[in-house]
Every structure is written in structure tokens, then in C-alpha cells.
Image 1 (cartoon, rainbow, N blue to C red):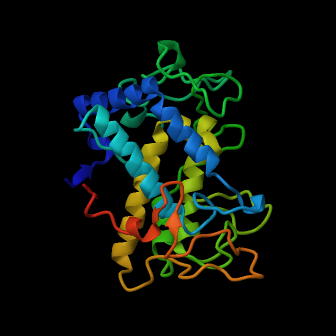
Image 2: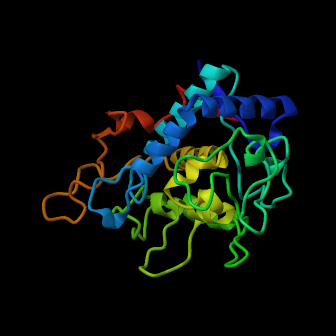
Length: 289
């Protein structure tokens, strides 16, 4: 049955509680940490010399759509009425919004060690011990806005700049792609050494703490962030119905630096080994409110 994903700022107290309870149940079972490990395993960068399917690559959107769908299905095994809400970071832009409330995701980390001490995912409650990508401690960390190097959440205008792109992706099919919707929304700087980040990447940097790097799934806000990224992709598809929904159509050939490093439209997508094309549409699976 097709289910509906809502904006998190419309959630009732009961919906927040059910979502949080299902996430905590996955954590207790060990299933949540499997999702963290999967993201770590498939976070392959431009310089790693291997196939990239999750980041810095055209399959960024379909890979995360499948990843998010698998997480949502795991939640629904705990509570069939739960869906993943989305966080529109162009609207809910401050630490004071309900997303970061004590009854939902908890707030910012404390100044000394960035440990989150409020909300259901605070280490002090004993329900959320970080076991993957552990850095300074086994607790969830956040550092909103990175005061030591301040960054703002993306604006509506910045998102619009990506949505206006009329091509899905462009050569060289990595973090340096200057054209195309994928990298404009994924948000990598298109020049080596540039420290400017955009859209999706800027959100990770604004939340900071565990949201930086491959272990970002340790922070449950990851899922709400990527649900909005998925919604933006869906809206882009509707806005540009006559363009190729995915590029490249064929894998780069021998001699191309991206040979065997990116997926083409007709390829299967690891680790699920499903056709990438199966994730180009979602209306038979879920819709957005």
C-alpha cells in the first residue's frame, strides 16, 4: 500500500512519539547500526579509485532513495503506522524549531564536547550508544552552525538554483561536475580547494558532529534530511519531465577516468542488486504530503 511522508513540522505529539519509539526499537535490535555500517561501507570518495554509488556520483539520488526506503520498511516492522518525515531546511532554519525539541530529536550538543544531552537520543538515557564511527565518545554529537567556522543552512534561493538545472548530471560525473542537478543539490565545491558547500552538504555541515562524514546515519536527523532531498528530486523530475531522468545512459568507456567508477542508467545498484531504474519513480511506493 502506498504510504505518505509528511513534513516533520506537521507532526503531532503522538506521531513524534511513535517515530522515536520505532527508531529506538531498531537501535535496541542492532538493526539501526547495520544501516550506519552500510552507509560507511558505501561512502566512497573521488580519490578512492573504486566504484562510487552513494556519494560524488550520479546514483546519489537513487541509492539514497533505496536506502531510505529500506529504513522506512524496517521502522514499519516495529510500527506499521510509522513513516519517515522530511525536514525542509529552507523553512525550519533555527535550533528553536520543533524538530529539535525534547520530545523529538533533541537539541544541540553542549559546548565542551558537543554531546547531545536533551531528547530521546541523549546518551544519558542509555538508549543511544554510538558504536560505529566513534570519535571522541560513544554519545551523539551536534554543533549547530559550527561557531568556530560559521555556516548557515541553505536558503530557498540556493535550492532554487539546483532545481532550475535542466540536465540531471554532467561530466566528469563526480564532485567536480559544474553542471547538472545532481551535484548542484548534493552540494560539492566544483573547484579543488574551495571550501564552499551547498544544499545537501551544507545541511550536514550545519548540524555537524556525527552528521559530518560517513557515519552521519548515527544522527537520526539524517533520515529526515534525506527524505527532503528525495522530495526535491521528485519535484525536479516533475518540473523537467522531458529530460533524461538519469545520466549517464552508458558507463564511461575504457580510458575515461570514470570507467568502472559510476553506474549507468541500465545498471544494477549495490548492495541490493536491484535495477537502478526501479528507483527513478516512487509513486507506487509512497507519496509526499
